[in-house]
Length: 165
Ligand SMILES: [Zn+2]
Image (tube, rainbow, N blue to C red; front, side, top):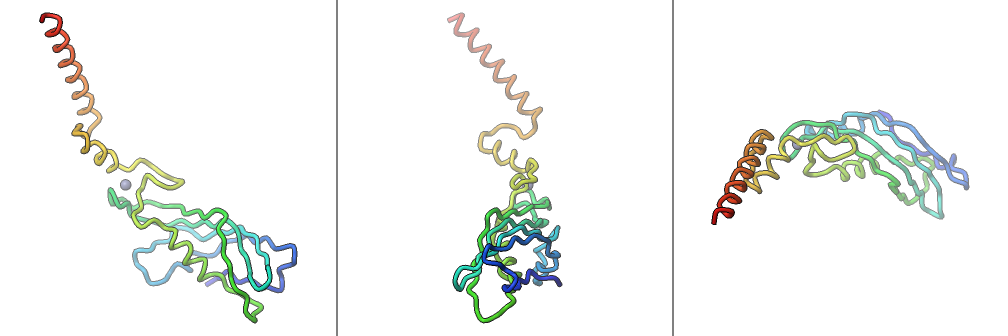
């Protein structure tokens, strides 16, 4: 298993830019509901201020989640932009950020994912059903069309009535 290990001695005063990927194995934490769909990519700047290592960067990983609305599995691409990690420095030369990063990523995953959310969104088949049930409009587009034209017919009849009154 590859980790995101930082050798603190390699960070110059001006800071260090680090890019790369960590295999998705780091998410194998014994949770069968957690299905990573890609490696974790990172692009970050490291700097040391006093006794603190500061990491700011972009982190991205994909997971297969199940839509809380329609139950369809879909791939959710999680992006943490400008994400900050601060680590207190102890007397070590090597710092392993893997655990911290894994936790930050998992915490950022939506608890109730919807397949029409996220950067690779598609329309949720259940979303329309939920919306329309509030308004008592038939589910299918065809049905809605019928209702609409019926409405027009009644409107037309009403207009006729008004005219004759
Ligand atoms: Zn859905």
